[in-house]
Length: 207
Image (tube, rainbow, N blue to C red):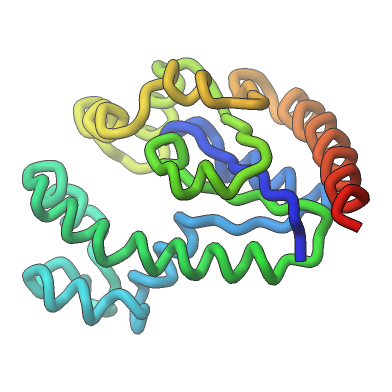
């Protein structure tokens, strides 16, 4: 069990997944709350019966998974629907992420949480917070290219998240993702060495 948890966050399109993968390649364990959400809302996912009971059956696609585009449109136009969704998913995600962090055997765990800044319950679990940062114009470009969304749709998603300034304000460490992959790898390598040292200090103090 690891006693050292690093919360990783960043806005949509900042490159959280790429940075998370680099930490895993360096030897860290990864607990990704977005991946857990996908598990819960996939075909046969534990959250689907609850979601189908709370919302119209059209929120599920032909496979029985959550239709994320349909749900996205619903919650951006209906704050009550957003709260219903959060009330169903968030407790399940917190429970599973807690269990997976506790089960990790690596010196430290990367806990990837897109809305970490907005959630005190996740922030309180982390010994460090690392923010993946890039200019907002680059975020918009990446998401439009990756997801096929319009600029208005991307900016609406960004408006519902913490601002860039708010994320940087809570950061202990920042990964700047506005250059090439080599630069990104170098930053992650330095932080990996730092987290190994800090986690060893904590482990020694707890002995």
